[in-house]
Amino acid sequence: MGEYQEYEGVRDASGMRLAIVAGRFNEHVTKPLLEAARSTLRELGVADAPVHWAPGAFEIPLVAQRLAMSGAFDAVVCLGAVIRGDTPHFDFVAGECAAGIARVALDTGVPVVFGVLTTDTLEQAQARAGGAAGNKGYEAAEAALRTADVLAQVTRAAPRD
Image 1 (cartoon, rainbow, N blue to C red):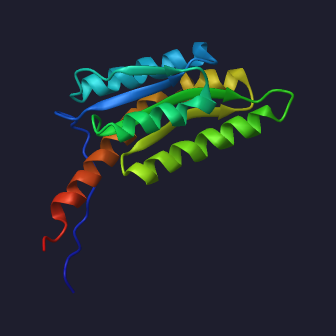
Image 2 (cartoon, rainbow, N blue to C red):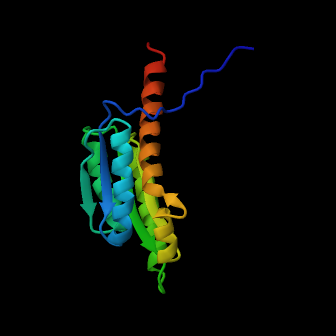
């Protein structure tokens, strides 16, 4: 039997262009996510990733869509925090944000990564934004880079007519 080619995104982002969309609502949680994402991108070779602030998580997909459709970016990192309250508002916002981000990626073919925390409590959000559970901003930035690289590899490896 023949060997199968495997494609795995690398962490070297030299020459890649990324944008970040951050939700301003729950900014005290989003800012540490943003700091980790930017730090990760700089460490891996992205000199400057512009940040585009959306009012909240619900608006993130629309901003991400405009960025993805611009052709100016290889990937878009979406960061925010939706914390459960006493009303069903959380379910609508978290679900629509996740679905919207996924739709943007599928519709545009540009990696649009979901780095939006959806937690039951502020403490859980803080733990995932630099606390005991690490920082999901780092993970979202790395996922965007790896996905963009895998897609580039697939494009290069595709058979030509």
